[in-house]
Length: 257
Ligand code: PEP
Image 1 (cartoon, rainbow, N blue to C red):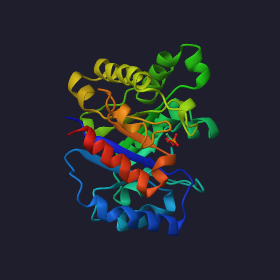
Image 2 (image 1 turned 180 degrees about the vertical axis):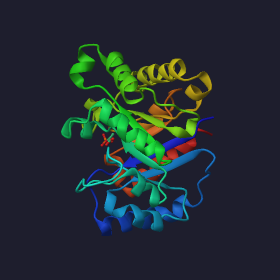
Image 3 (image 1 turned 135 degrees about the vertical axis):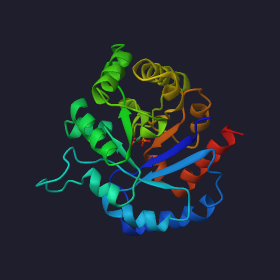
């Protein structure tokens, strides 16, 4: 059975003291979690990656980056390379988040370059895909998701399920308080899993985690996790509060009993 992933994307929130306080608040509760069933991930801003790794070193939490440069090395002021992330011992990075696509003009091709650099450096990309409200209203959801998958994963070899995670994040549900229903999300997750099956193979398609993101919170996570192809959440706002993050982990654990 696929593990449930509870991944927090902290975006540009929390300073040093906030990060410390959050880690302290969750560390003791998380030490006892059954790793067989759940994978907690947190993605703080770059300056706090190493601090969080230290603070959570005796918990099962994996620390992730929120993004990576599309360049391997060089005169790119302000950017952080996949090799740098790897040198910290990180195993995960989000890539292709809709905020990066919309505000930094990241095309599928750029996302693909980032993804390849992550994989070359033994990091596992959490690849975000998702349609806007106009695209959904125009009945283009499937077309958009397939374009994003075909573009971001063009000629990308995947050998095992640990190579990647995919996060379906409908843009209209991110930070809006408006969540896709379990059924709406499941429909797209099935499209993604079927695409993986046709593009790679059935075993990989069965094992690659597909997360849902978009206003996930303690109130709605159980309904989403009840869907057969939803393997966890990529969570913004609700992951910023230690009590809510822990609550969602506990609900996830309950859902696999
Ligand atoms: C996100 O940032 O990926 C996200 C889904 O945010 P929120 O949970 O706040 O909608």
